[in-house]
Length: 331
Image (cartoon, rainbow, N blue to C red; front, side, top):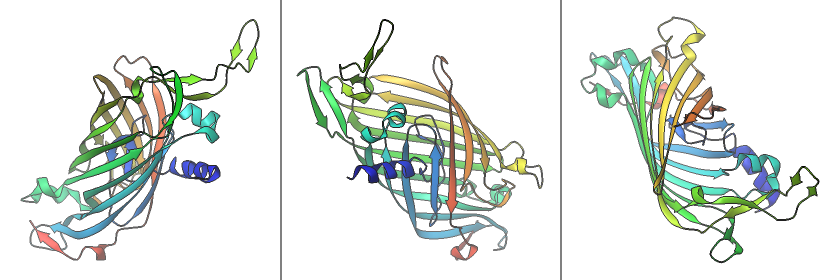
């Protein structure tokens, strides 16, 4: 691929992580909000990465109560999702030497049930199947290819490798009322041992004096390539503390604590975090969605030895119309 085109793609994708509204420091989802038939552009200041996603609705319907079609609760869409992503896991290298970046590419296909619009979430408790009506979920299969320079210990030689990975991820969110959302997700991936490899540089100093030595940019990864299974699960909750304050922009404010555990082969990693978000619409109980927003994230490892601070956000293009939902279900 032309290097200039690749850099443009990386720049665009670094602000495009559609359908993932809140992320952790690695750019992995903390809260996913899918919406059928609309486009999204998102960004994070974590690892330069991005995902372009579109959901093709196959079925749309809404729930209503009291046998009155004007007493709507939520509008739901079910459809097929497809996404393409570009990612590099080394933010420092990307900023210092963007021309040398070797990104990974990922293609994903899935099936989603999304809550596209909340007509009146306060009526959820009146539904006979309120548990179903307030749930969004999805499952995706994906394939990924990386591009790395690898210096293998066993052969003491450098080679350019294109390791491939396959996996599955799923998410589930429960909208109980206007001020609380509970969400979980899981991911399994058959991949390679990037977590066990170190970075290396050319042994050619650019500058040397009595106090310092200046080396060239990182060139690749050092170690022996091995296959392994990686797993990730995440638990999070969004709280909208001021949702009952009428006609106030404080209704846009959300606080999302989250917990993540990553398994890299036999090694595991814990992440504890919180994201403070400002949503594009007031979470006021009627006629809103979570389609866009911006956030400031903080997270830590299990030793709380370092605080990671990052920005994230999503801009939505398109709007779900009431006319899209022609079939109502009384519950």
